[in-house]
Length: 450
Image 1 (cartoon, rainbow, N blue to C red):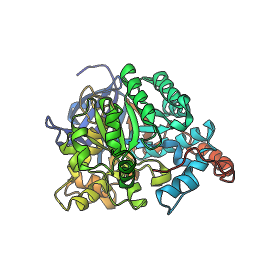
Image 2: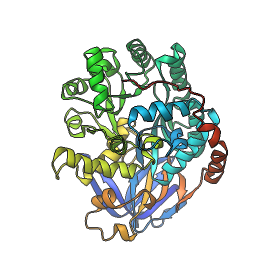
Image 3: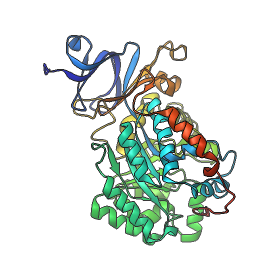
């Protein structure tokens, strides 16, 4: 081991690790050495007792995990939390969300992004995939606060060619920024708001520039049924016809994916993944959920997500992990399916693969980016620990995250945010709310009509 000071040493913790077959395991009384933004080693606490370090964290009673990844969200929609309650999805969009979003300014988006990033850092999220508007401001917040993010500027065909062009320009301009923490994607909204011609053009742009694509598709069964009635194709078949299944593609939700779609998803020409955000499906009373088991059998990784706080009311990936495990058991009628260790695998390595970062994050191993969270399991709700994986999935909460590290930089330590001024953001947001939430103008950015 190098004799020069490490950048960070975390010691005395239990470390969540993956073996060569990607099975979850735990190393007690362990230590993590971080140097040059990478995990240099995962070793024993005794081995690093005398190792000099610029920063040192004693983490007795805590579990060190790869940072959680929110595979699909709309961070700025934190400003709409609680605004559109107890509505079916078409009224939610048409009567509240899309009219209010027509008011959004870059300043509103920045404040929403600050609030969301603070919430995610405090909840142990180290990377998020975002799909929204005015994304230059979100990229700036990410650069400042230290998170990792996979960002796309959303567009509708109703915006004309300029919308697609802005999406491509954003992706090319911001790819690799924030010291490499920002990756980018093209971001057509969905097959029901983007024409086949625009989807085909997006696929061509993706291939030309080596960019992935992030969009909503087959969000629910109604969308799939409407697509079949109108086009004779499922939304997934539309993606195949327009060439998007030959790109690196992240599909949000997919609760309307049918059995006939699975062979297409199994033989795509690119890296295809699905993000599941189960709380929103419960809230909108959708009868189905993401077919995680069938997608896994087809070789499609499923990452965990929250969607935006307007439809979820939180950006809590811990809750997404718990709900995914429980709903999958219920849906499949199999108590042995989606075990706690499988849920942790979805939250870590599978989520990393979903956002195209499977080679750099998602596991704590030498050479991986040092995206690490420390989870305190000394509270009464996490004791006793008979099964550590079950404790993490079904007992631990976002508030149990004590420390969040991204690229070796400590963003939160002992629950104190170090890179964001949350009270200032909340105060400014309260001042702006009356103009932001006005719906008296009668405008909306789009109409939900699947």
